[in-house]
Each structure stands twice: as C-alpha cells, then as structure tokens.
Image 1 (cartoon, helix red, strand yellow):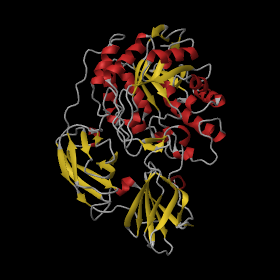
Image 2 (cartoon, one colour; image 1 turned 180 degrees about the horizontal axis):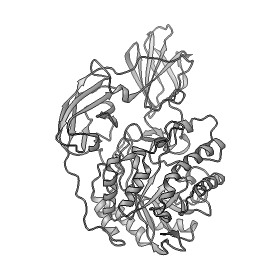
Image 3 (cartoon, helix red, strand yellow; image 1 turned 60 degrees about the vertical axis):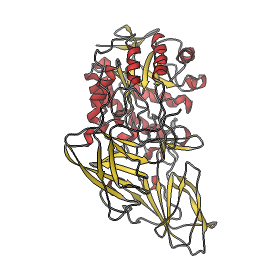
Image 4 (cartoon, one colour; image 1 turned 90 degrees about the horizontal axis):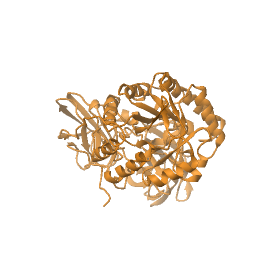
Length: 572
C-alpha cells in the first residue's frame, strides 16, 4: 500500500520527503474529449500532480438530480490523471469561488428560505453533507492508500475571508472522515493572520494562496502552521477578465521567479491555473465590490497552457524552473497552430423572443421564483393611461435590462452602471428583457436573487400586474423568422476535419453563440474579449451549423472564424 502523509517538515510519500508540484485543471471548464490532452500537456511542464475543484452546481443544478456523467464525470477525470502517472488533489468546497457562477453553490440551495450560507445552519449543513457524501463516493476509492492517486482533500475554500464558524468546519471534517477519506485534509487562505486564524482548525493543514512575494508569504504561513510542509495551494500565475476591462496578464519571467522562490524554499505548490479553460454556456461568475463586474466567457487566465490547450512562453519559463527541482519530460508540446480561417454568411431569422405566458403577480417574479436557471427572462405589464414621458423606476435591475414600449425599444438599464430608472413614452404595454449576466461568486452576495428586484413604479405610482416568461436560450437557438436587430442568425459551413476554431464576434452587439447545438457562451462588444473558442470536439467533418442569438444589433450578418484568439487589449 502506498502512503501519503504529513511529516514534521515535509509531505511524505511512502515515508520519504515529497515536494508536490501541482497545477489546476477544472474538468467542468474543458470539453471531456480534451481532458486527456490537457493533463498530458500539464505533465510535460514537469507537474507531478493535478488539482481540481468540484462544482456542485454543475453536478446538481436541480435539487435531487445528481449527475456524475459526461462533463461531470469526476471519476473518469481522476482516472485519466492516474493514467498519466500523476497524483490528484480534490477540492470539493462546497464553495469554490473560481470565478464560476454562484461560487459553485446551486441556486436551489442558496435561494432556500431562511438558509444560512457557509455556516452551521441546519438546512445548509444537511444539503452540504449529502453533496459531500456523493463526491466522496467517487473520491474515496481513488485515494492513494487504496491503490488510487488522490493525495489531498481540501475542507471548504478560503473560508477565513468569509467566516469563522468553527463548528461548521468541524462538521465538514466529520462528514469527510465518515465518508472514508483518509488522506491528509487541508485548508487554504490568503496569508493574512486573521484569515489563517479564522479559516482552519488545529487538525487541518493550513496552506496559502498568493501569486507574488513568495518568501514573505511563506514566512507568514509558517507562523500559523509551525510544523509540516509549507504549501502555496493557489499560486496565482495570471488573472481573470471581466467585461469592460482589459485582458489581464502577468510577466512570465516575474511569475517564474516567484515559482522558483517557492520551490527553492522546499515548499509545495499548486499552480492556479495551469490551464484555465472556458466558461462555456452561461457559467461565468461575477464580482461586486461596489461595482458589479461579470466575468467574460474565456477563462484563459494567462495560464501556462492557453485556452485552446497549447503551451505559452510562461509554460516554458515554468518548465525551466521546475527542471531545477524535479524531473521534466524530455519532449515539450508544440505551440498553437493557426486555426482555419472561414467566413460564413448568416441568414437573419428574426426575433426569437417567446410570447408572454404565466400567471400575473403584483411584482415581477425573480429567476429563482420561476425556477429558471437560464440567463434570460421576459417581463410584461399593461401600462395605465398616462400622458407624455413618465419615470419608470425599479428597485434594482439584476443585471441588464432592455426596455420596450409597445414593441419599440426605449432604453437599457445596467446594474454595472447602477442604473434603475428611465423615462418612457406613453403606451399600452411594457416589455422588459432581463439578462442574468453571471452570479456573484464571492463574499456576501452569494445566492442573491436575479431579475427585476424590489418592484417598479411609473410616475411615482406602483406598477403592478406583471407576467414573467423564462426564455430557454438553447431552445430559442432553434427557432426564429424575420430580420436583423434582436435576431436569430444562422449559417452553415464545411470542414474537412474537426479543428479548434476562433469565432470573431466583433461585428455583433451582445448575445449567445452556438455551434452544432454546443453553447459556446456569451459575446459582447464591450471589451475585452473579441473571439470565442470553439473546441474541435464540438465540430465535425462536413457540414456544421452556427447559430447566434443577438440581443441588440448585429452590424454585419457574417460569422468570421479567425486564425488566433483575441482576448483584448493589455495594460500598457
């Protein structure tokens, strides 16, 4: 039996000191047919371990409907890691942050009346316990002391930045151990004394999350973890992007230097991210620290392995550093080839909005009250008689609303810009299309409701009698007839063989794109991201179909596939 334990100063693999050199891959952000390739490429950089979060809301978006197949086949992902001779670290949360919608927590959970999120509140603990037991049914038999490759399991995630409920942490540990997890248990927090003190328990091994000033951060960590190995279990080698900003990058040489300092100190490391992947569909998260900033579709993260799975300059810089401390495979993978360049005419098939349905309520129903997990809801209300423009005011818009009177567009309201009011002309019917642009994945806004929040007034008087109609985006992608504007656009193109593509969305406004029914994600002309990654497994030899659901106006009804990604302007 192989053992992996914590010694006085090191991790011990079969009793011998072992330095973990790991990198993060999120199976839920990578097409399953690419899992093996991404793992193999990460191994070529010199890693001996792969780490992943587990996204609860990917496995159980609807309460009681657990799924661990296909994209959610965590067992297969861990087995592919083992097939490459690598160890695995599993971080099941339940909260994962990760710039992933709602921080990985299911909407049905966080919208439960009276629930206490991330603390020892009975409803939350009961649901989390059931979730963890399901995850550990997959993980436990794959632990290293049972012939598998899992060497570490993390309890919660950066909990010290959120709370300090020790009873909650103890309950997670109890459930974990009762489920047969015998490998060492860890926690992670930024190396700030108050976070490290609040986010762990004496029997758990503290690790740190940081991306610079390695020596200083390790010293702080050692003050709070006086024995055992030092580990940076989130070494931030890049950063994420949000709409309306720049494309964030870090200097490869600077990141490699900080990695070198870590490894030279004998610390173990998990590189976050070694390969970021993509927020396919509508899975991106958001941050709100006074300004709501939804995350873009790409999760390239400026990682050593780019969004389409190819090594970058940072990959080679890290590989050179790792080679000083551990064996590195002799062959490095080649760089990204140019993708096929195509131009596809799109037919404008017109407005794809569903007709209003559903019961009437005084206030607009939230996405949660509708049980709707998609990004769009249509709201309708009959307007009372009034003369001239009047002020339409909502309590709050979450997150972006297009306002129409009698079918004519009159304005847009943005949560990011703190907009919630506009003057509308007289008419008989008000229609508001609301987009959930991404659920906040951090701090106290986890689980917040989406839609038109807090009711509405017109000219100071309450506006009541609303219907709310969920828009099934994937279904809408198969229908439509008419013109450009808010339109469904469709085209076909031929390929000799499947290949990764990069879809240029620069001629479009805002919306969603699909290839052969595969939901690529959101696009927006609001910078930074201009291209969407199209993974080769979503394509086929011969005829392929692209469908675009445009929310505003496409300047040019053409789909252009370009040779390389364009993720936005860099900071100068």
